[in-house]
Length: 333
Ligand code: ATP
Ligand code: LTN
Image (cartoon, rainbow, N blue to C red; front, side, top):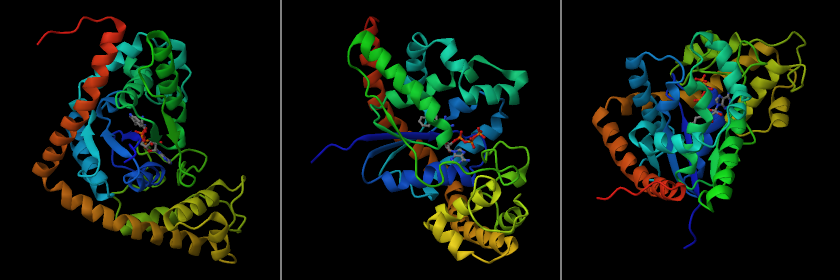
């Protein structure tokens, strides 16, 4: 049998996932499980780059795991683990840090945005975020990384570091490719459709959380900021309507053109309600399943344990190879 390619991705447990995270990332992950060796992580070390309430971080980690499984990521069919449970991630980050230049990290859009947003806590970890992400990916000989469009720049760093290491020490890492879905790669805020929908937005009306109930979802869509032109078409000067059309398309599998046709002649009110209903139908069952799984902490701890064991086996092999190549003396057992 032909060997499957390895796929790696992760989400930070920085809050409850949004519709943006789902449509931009997780939805694609499920459909790739049969075709790739899939490794999905909960990037808790990344989350520490902005201030966290410790108890909330712990709760969000279990929540995200339950959500992964509720979204169809069967832990029997993929490796599902918590990043901090596999020390090799932090260890490879150190080695990669010695070959990364501050300028490469300072020009990252996310670093600039988050530095402004968290001006009281611009720490080394925030700047080093893409190097830890590169370590995540490179430890597993990953070939494909499904992410939303906002992560493309970070993936470039991972590629550059892989090539740099290979050139300096001989072929070691595979050079990973991003996989960015055709629809839903960038879902915008419902309150400011020129900004991406983000789970850390201080205005809860700006995002749909996968924890929102039916009423909240429909209310948020009814309040979504649009324009006053009245036509339901996608256009550059109509970011609000365009965003709603692409959400509708991503959820139903219809193209934007098909969605435009469906709502031709309808008013914005009806259109917004229809999008809200469709999204509520999608999220309701996922939320219920997540809540059911979340009650069983023992099950989740078991998933974490076996996930970390499987991940560690691959990661430690890569790390040992890296340590050897850079000239560190092997520890005797
Ligand atoms: P935070 O608000 O804490 O920065 P976030 O909501 O941006 O977090 P991440 O955990 O950084 O979410 O991202 C998880 C995945 O979801 C990534 O693959 C990212 O590209 C994708 N993603 C995040 N926001 C969107 C969005 N609005 N549309 C599409 N994909 C998104
Ligand atoms: N930075 C990513 C989360 C993440 C990730 C990764 C994604 C951490 N490590 C490795 C892909 C591969 C984000 O989506 N904000």
